[in-house]
Length: 290
Ligand SMILES: C[S@@+](CC[C@H](N)C(=O)[O-])C[C@H]1O[C@@H](n2cnc3c(N)ncnc32)[C@H](O)[C@@H]1O
Image (cartoon, rainbow, N blue to C red; front, side, top):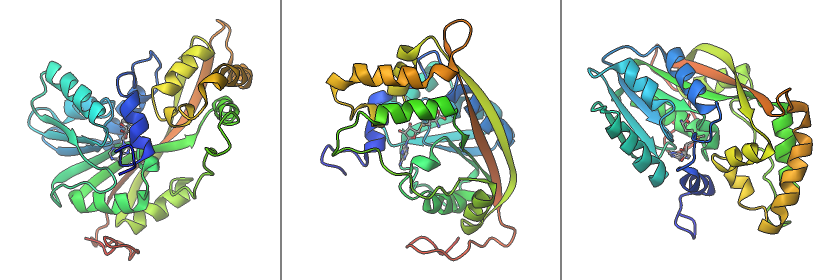
């Protein structure tokens, strides 16, 4: 736990973002969640685990796919995400869905308990993604399916705007240099999955267009998800200047109605347990396979 009582700063940011997460009128997580579930090919009656469930962009289509003869367990480490989503599940009358606090890094769930594990836009947020995948493989009932979505290519204007915001961070709070990405490209993804004891069955790329009224709407969206992890370190008296710099960076995304249009490419990887049931030897206490 950090001194503020959160497992890590990412979860703290999502906890604060939860009431507005995927509720700013921007099309992004919804279509990606639907696509992830479609690619996973979930059948009625299957038992599904959704890790890092947020406000349910994956959970709700998954619950529709399993139907009431199946079951969806959803875990998230941010209590506000869990309680708000649990309320939505109750309101929707879904009795075959169970939303609870749980760690996507190391889910404390029975081995072999799931036909499908889904991880929508979350594995790259985890401290040790490769180790998490090995944990997911252990949760699958053979042959099982794991479906994960990861970034293929963010819109260049979005990247430039985030970089513009980051120039306003205090010197003692620099934007972290990205670590080696185990989902950087298809070859790397295949190697990562193999090491987790999984064989890739399909990798597909999907584009989602997100529209914003203006830069203030884009900032509202940034506060509502992982972007908050950056914004909350920008001093209050720098936010106006930071927003102006972001607006300049977003100019290439301007469209005719005066709004902004950003296109993000996302990869969906589907993998199954390897036929021989083996994981590649890997370092760490849980690295020895199933
Ligand atoms: C970008 S959101 C994705 C949410 C959802 N899957 C979707 O597609 O909209 C990432 C989610 O993962 C959660 N999260 C981050 N680290 C986690 C961890 N170690 N264990 C469980 N959930 C975690 C956050 O609280 C947040 O709800």
